[in-house]
Image (cartoon, rainbow, N blue to C red):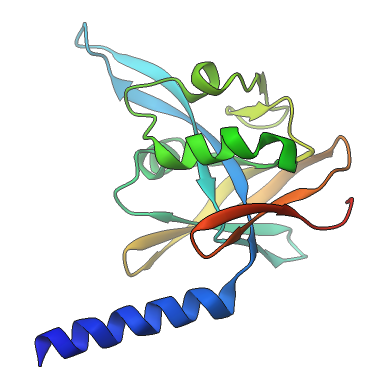
Length: 182
């Protein structure tokens, strides 16, 4: 019976993914304190991670939500710093976006590894990506536990729109460049 239930759960998850996709893919940038490998002090760590579970949730005040796995390194950074930046990337950066979603930033510098350039956000203590088409700088106003994820609801403190381009979307387990020139 347990095998049947696990199979049924897998079928339901697969069906949900088919129904809910494609979803626009973003890079979230974070900054937080981490224990230093070489001293008892803490180091500041910047990181990037890939998400497709995100959405605006309010116009007044302007709120934006992201959903991140409870065990992700970046989840811990956001919980510590209470800020994050949502970076909307063009399809020309698909390789970098896939890299950021494949590897943990706990022991590597994803900015360095991908060649993406960080710039300081204007209103929060967190980097953003220079090559991003647009960015939302957010302060966490609420955290909601949702199964194996945490939904961070951020108040949009600043929004920057730099350029237009084709967006990256997730279709089941692959990324595709699509969409109009927004």
